[in-house]
Length: 340
Image 1 (cartoon, rainbow, N blue to C red):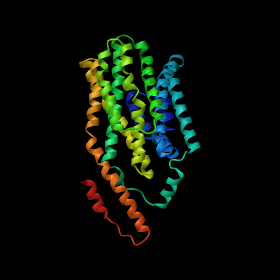
Image 2 (cartoon, rainbow, N blue to C red; image 1 turned 90 degrees about the vertical axis):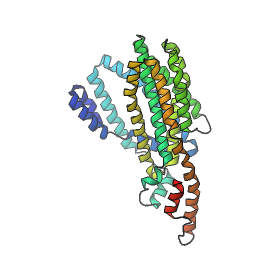
Image 3 (tube, rainbow, N blue to C red; image 1 turned 180 degrees about the horizontal axis):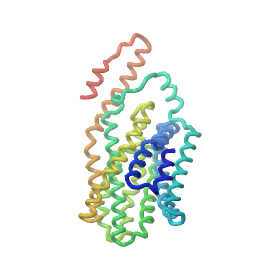
Image 4 (tube, rainbow, N blue to C red; image 1 turned 60 degrees about the vertical axis):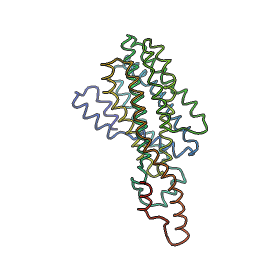
């Protein structure tokens, strides 16, 4: 209801009140991002989760393609106030539908395990260096995507082709859909760090084709096809890396990382576009994303220690069930080995 009220009233609020209302509505908004992805992780087998998350990313691309066009058409015919009220009503209907459907956020096996193991899992057990590396990859991916979008819009503006901006963005999103179809058809996914680094590398030379926006769209094809796979791979890895009972919190961290990556991009891209031109914004997008990805491999390598210690912990649990609990390694000793 907070989001619906905000969108219904935002069009006539003065700016100070608008800023406060936007903050309140954001805090009280439905956690659609984390809930839908928790449901996907619960419904889709682990071996096929990269397919499910790829489909989710593709649907987001479709929304991104259709949303702005529908909003412009509605504002042209109905006005901004009516359009914002329609958005608010749509959000309220979506929230009610989510409440009525009440989808499962854990599979049957995960629910049984959740009931058998009372208590919460300490955050230090799953917020590992590898998880931090995944958040870094997510921020890098959003940095590249947001900077590329801003550079594309600036290129169209400088070329006095703003009438074709919507079509250009829609074509760029279509590249992502094609890449999603290809990635979803693979038998296994790839490392999100590798995909993000490759996407950044392919974005670096795009500015060389900024002289003609049609050639620019063609130059965006290789990196554009990696958008959906990159976003899907980060979510797929997070769903496998954290325990089911903490999956919602982990996905919330992932969403926050995406928001931070996008928010940090705007001022940087703006300075580059105003000072050097939009063609250089593509270069900064690719190099900046690659630099962020290259900074996290030391954290990602720590994942090997966790992978090795997992079978040991499982063996300790089985041994404890068949006799007096005599752990092979104490918790402090396990933590010491993990740190080194």
